[in-house]
Amino acid sequence: MTSRRNAISVEIHPESHFVLFKIQGVAYGKELLDITERTYASLTEPWRYNRLYDIRQFINVLQFDDFAAMAEQWPRLAGRVRTLKVAIVTEDPVRIARADTFTRVLPNVEARTFATIETAETWLAEEVPVKAGASHG
Image (cartoon, rainbow, N blue to C red; front, side, top):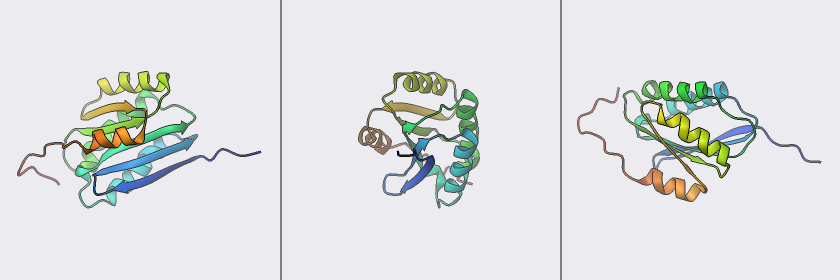
């Protein structure tokens, strides 16, 4: 008998300016917020890093309040407001519908769902314009 591993792993991709969060098993919004806070605090230019969530092995669901808290956390982590691109990898139609519904009402977040990590990475690699002379801190 095998046991399912519960974990949130983090991979920083400095060349493409995104952070990959792989969520397996059971995880909660507070845990994800805490890991995100620690991860972005370790980045030299946190405002440059978008997010990729691989939730294909995620068991439970995040609630709207969890999504809203992530959107509210972004300006504090980034040091300024710019749209955060969030790629979510899942093929589950319920998760796709939830993500589409939630992200439409969140400020400073542009989120899309993808079937593969590769297509999500391609979308994240598209340039996000940064205004010259913008404050970073």
